[in-house]
Amino acid sequence: MNYKRLTPHLVQLTTVDSTNNYAAKLLKATKVANGTVVMTKRQTEGRGQTGNVWETEADKNLILSLILYPEISVNHIFNLTIVASLAVQKTLAVYLNNVKIKWPNDILVNEKKIAGILIENQLRGDLVLSSIVGIGINVNQENFVSTKNACSLKSLLNQDIDLNEFFNLLYTNLDFYVNLLMEKNFKTLLQRYYENLYGINQELIYEDNTGQFNGTIKGISDSGKLMLMRDNILVHYDLKEIRFVF
Ligand code: BTN
Image 1 (cartoon, rainbow, N blue to C red):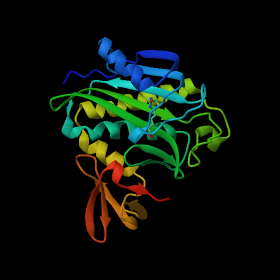
Image 2 (image 1 turned 180 degrees about the horizontal axis):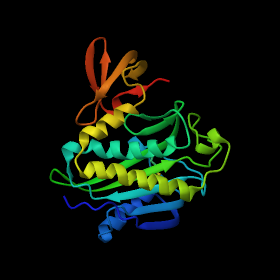
Image 3 (image 1 turned 90 degrees about the horizontal axis):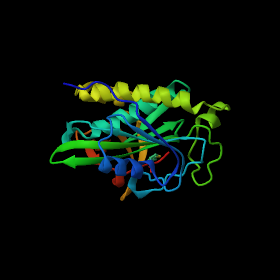
Image 4 (image 1 turned 180 degrees about the vertical axis):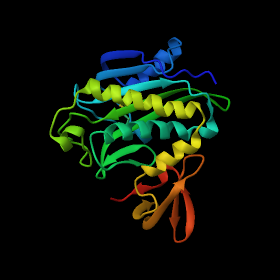
């Protein structure tokens, strides 16, 4: 094991289409350090999960992509989602109560979304060569026009948060959880993920292509699928196959 913690190399941009796109170009062009962060003040074509758009007001929020060389096999790829979710959750929990991870990697406070994560991996065979961990956190934005179920630190605390301070804390937490990943401590990661997972062991309403139903999250499979107990049967769901009904 020769992992020596992340190198906090920061590429600070003013405007970019998407920090994930920029990080992908950087990775192709040169061998950047493990832990490099591409951060911007303004993002014009932010991308979200499942082809969605990520809208974020300029100068107010954290918009970044972390570049990692995870050295794990694709069988363990969901651990990257766990690492990023836990780091964001832990950072927000310094400021707020009731910060939860909604499977797979939305971060909620009181059931409203405060942060989103988009991870894009480059594979060789069954090895994860590099990963771009895109993170968007609503920090000082107050108005959410197109997303009614969103919130920010400012909307909840009524005060501005120092973006640099918040980023430094986030980076420390990313480093901590990446460390667990590099040590292949998947058991601890999954345990912490469960401790912070929205709806675990709780009967809630979900919706799939057959309509709404009651179900209880029992855990996450090795491949990252949501395992829901539904009418006494354990069903595995992929991201596009299920929706939480709040
Ligand atoms: C989601 O919840 O759908 C994921 C949102 C991820 C947004 C971040 S912002 C920084 C990075 N660059 C992007 O284009 N997307 C991610």
